[in-house]
Length: 254
Image (cartoon, rainbow, N blue to C red; front, side):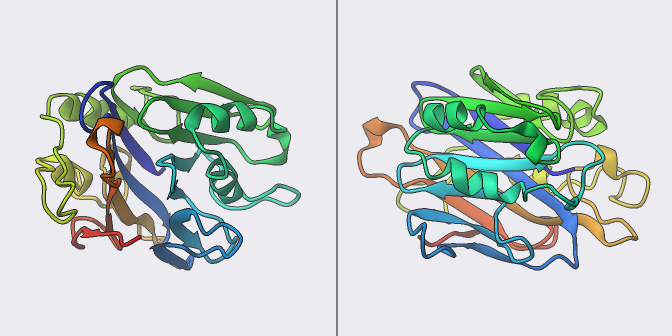
């Protein structure tokens, strides 16, 4: 039940803003974003130490890729490839349009169902895999949310609870000189929101939670991609290496 919030504003200084909470078993080992793959030195991403892939990353051409499980598909399955490999494969491409086209050609039966986002400062795509095929659909400008169901699907209690709240907020305004600064406004507050308390039975309508089983929010990211007009300004990535209601966001070093 990971959750991704995406704001597309073509023509703005920061045309793509992403906030993402990762939900996983707290016993599954992982490492914070870094350059963890010798054969992919251009990739900056978190490392899933169990399967060797990642849930979220960015490459040196400024493309972001993220993957989320669909409902009822947590964990690996016999005979299926790791979905975390797909983020790395996406980040082998220079832009989102090429990545989406390539991923849509994959055999969906090779993976458990997933949602995926690939985006850059020009385009963004939602990839939906149902266990048979992979579909790539463009994401329109505006504020969107994605979790374990479809994009902006209000049958998800979490999207129903938070989509309009995010839509009502002023856009974040990162500082290109100081990644620790900038006006992220209420976005971090909502990413850390525990809804009805973040306890068992209420987590479907909370952005941040932990179940008694140990499954819950284990990290959070805030990412902003700059427009070409800003020149050599680098993307901004702030990362909380734990529940964002208990852990401070810090700048990811490239």
